[in-house]
Structure formats: structure tokens, C-alpha cells
Length: 91
Image 1 (tube, rainbow, N blue to C red):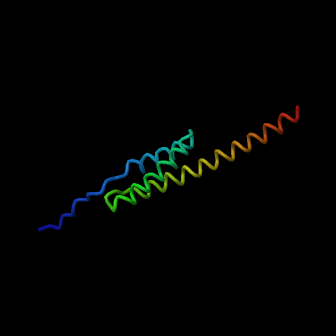
Image 2: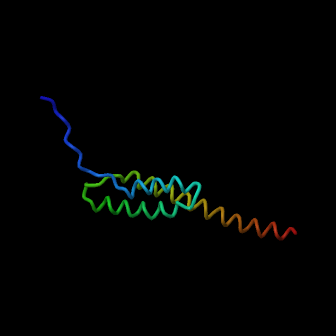
Image 3: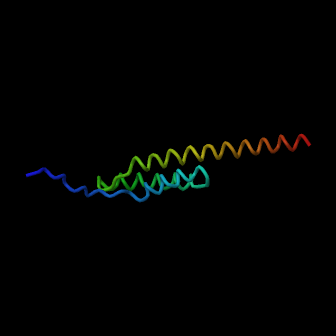
């Protein structure tokens, strides 16, 4: 008799997957804010599921990418505002 593994009844959090996807898309679009929101919602959903859901790592990755891209976007906007003012003062 073989020892067959027990079936895994946990489900992947759709919000965690979407958070990661929008975090990756945040590089080329404004998906970073959506990634952050979905990442936090996914982590809350997973935490409240009492082990019935998984995907916390995906949610964390989506959050990290989202926050990094939000920071870079903010930095680029500030840089653009200062550079625009500087370039206009030259003329």
C-alpha cells in the first residue's frame, strides 16, 4: 500500500495573484496603486481564512512591487516639476 498524499484543500487567493500582476504592470502603467490596494486586501483575506487560502507570498511580492513603483513614480513627478521649472527659467 502506497502512502498517497492527502488532497490539499487550500485555495489560491485571486486578490494575491491580481496584486502581483498589477505590480508587474506597474512598471509600464499606473497599476502600482491597484497592486498595493489588492495586496493589502489579499493579505487580510488570507489571514482571516484560517489556513483555507494561500498566496501570502504573492501578495507580499505585489505589495513590494507596487510600493517600489509608487515611490519611483512620485520621484519622477517631483523631478519633472523641478526640471520643468529650471528649464523654463533658462528661456
